[in-house]
Amino acid sequence: MTLLGDMEPAEAESVYFNEYSAPKALPKHEALARAFIDLHVEDNRRVVLVTSGGTTVPLETQTVRFIDNFSAGTRGATSAEYFLQQGYAVIFLHRQYSLLPYSRHYSHSTNCFLDFMDEAPPTADAANPDHGSIVVRSEYQDEMRDVLRKYRYAKQNNRLLLLPFTTVAEYMFELRAMAKLMRPLGSNALFYLAAAVSDFFIPRSRMAEHKIQSQEIPAHLQGDTVDDSEEIYTGENEIQPPKNQKKLVVNLDPVPKFLHRLVDGWAPDGSMVVSFKLETDPSLLVYKARTALQRYSHHLVIGNLLSTRKWEVVFITPDAPHERWIRVPKARRSKSISGVEDQVGLAEIQKGGSAQKPTSQ
Ligand code: PMT
Image (cartoon, rainbow, N blue to C red):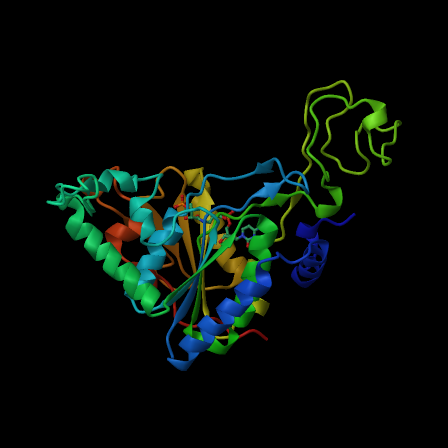
């Protein structure tokens, strides 16, 4: 059997997308995105699709367990703020419950918003001594006002569209749909792919329907699909533990790299595509980022290492200087740093890529 990763990109696309039904939320997301894009086409405004956060790989159709990755969505949420500041409208395609632009400053995972609040001194209302206002503590007022104003501006002016996904299949459906909807934008479209996308998945046809069992199920409770000659509990799926063993062996297939289809098929001609390359081994990073740029022929690969991603990235471009490191000086690195973007700004990212995507065929 040919693996999806070994097929031609267009064939892999049709096989992969036929395997799943589209996410339930897709029609609603498409309608929202269409209206959002129309508005900004009319205003001749640049629109960026920022992808952010990690994708999950469910182990069961009725999902109890899934494979996940580390991404909190810091890169995507931080970059989205800088794009907004530069006048872009942002479609923020993000993992549900990961960090969001602006609210990220006060999230549960970085700073709990309650730590920023205080009770105002009691009012003179003797009948209601406990009904004083809740206020932001004075030392945080300036920063919070600034964040609040930017957030309000983005909302009131329709500059930010938030679209959530969870699984890798949902992500792929959404990415394809958004890229196609963005066609009327032409060279005003930018793709900034910061999500941590799963490289492996379990094809739908091999997934367990129900929760994978860790103990043998009595014969009278097993479904009709049980074949006693197999070392498997429920029919075809390949991830059930063999009888009498408590091991769970998970057999994953490669997810096709849809970057190829994005650049050559889905995205508008003239748009710009920026992808990220994540590695943990420093000796591989530049090589892998360069290979990605050559393979997909897009504009910019931003390479980062898991351990240093918050203070250094490398830009790999088709044109000279080909490789450029951006580093936050040691003195400016602190625990509160949420991303290299907060330190160097988006201008660096815009400088990194050439403006035009090669026109396909
Ligand atoms: O969210 P943070 O905690 O701030 O972390 C940010 C980040 C490290 C996740 C981000 O900076 C980053 O590197 N994102 C890309 C992670 C990733 O998917 O790397 P990759 O080397 O597996 O893939 C490279 C590119 O191929 C990605 O742009 C991805 O969109 C694309 N891809 C990946 C898998 C796949 N099946 N198809 C793809 O097209």
